Length: 119
Image (cartoon, rainbow, N blue to C red; front, side, top):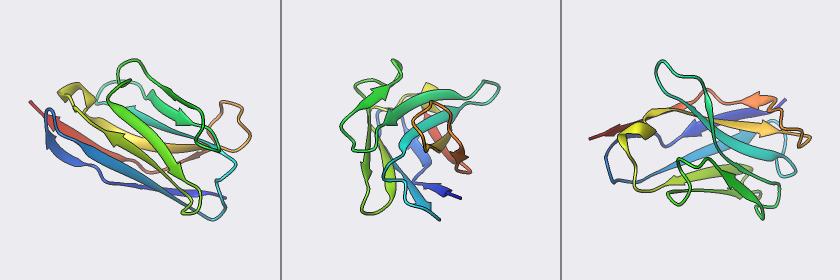
């Protein structure tokens, strides 16, 4: 089993920055595709970014492209989401997820961390 714990969320003004962290335990995730997703109040969960096992391939939702960067440190069994130029519409609970077999199905999820961007 993989246990994922997100941290780094908080309240920030529009235009500000935050870095989210996701620490994995129970098993190494160094071979897993990792992703960040978010869910705003009253909305469905949506994809934010993914990163392959080596960090050499990333993918972003259009809404965050150019503002967010996903990266990982396999030695620390962790993945990160650096967020710049935050907007009020980025307000959501952000979730880290792990896809062990690169199938597009994320089997493991964290509990989420709240990001609130004030105007």
